[in-house]
Image 1 (spheres, one colour):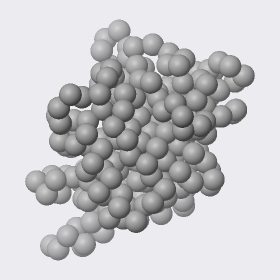
Image 2 (cartoon, rainbow, N blue to C red):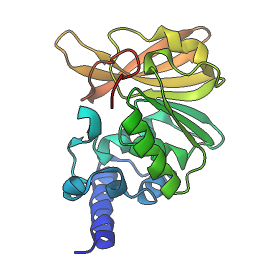
Image 3 (cartoon, one colour):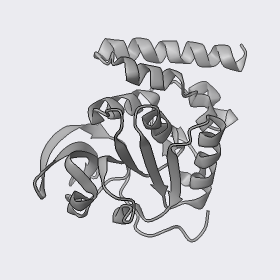
Image 4 (tube, helix red, strand yellow):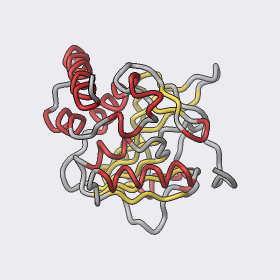
Length: 217
């Protein structure tokens, strides 16, 4: 089976799973279809690209499944013209999907290798509305203005109140919050005035945030 056919069949399986979950947003499905998942993984894991599982990537990290990416993006309720901050670039697949639905995406990661690889993938796809930076995600991105949506793919040990000021009025942040048992739940944090209104959603596989920029990799 050639790569293009494998990609097409993989997306078809994803499409059916998402429809079974009730995820039928046309803009989201189009963004997923236009973003070849295999481009964001090493050749060794191409066969796992559309399986509902974690896939290893560089720097000891992992890529969440396309199923989870779809669920997260759907939960963000992105609208045209919005600005989005992505904390934890990883493979770059999440940021790439978001970029097809938003006006501008700023994605940050503590690892230079991941940042550079993601930027190459964005350029290959012609996604000129993504800025990829190596930075400490715990500090957000001061100097970039406010964002309509913020999503983090590393878990916080408490409410990330430091991001309230980086959200536009009425903005939403998706943030994994660590539980006492070591697991994490994705929380939808809606900005109300100068505070967050919290709604816990579903379990996610994300690890705890590591502060600072990586000295190597």
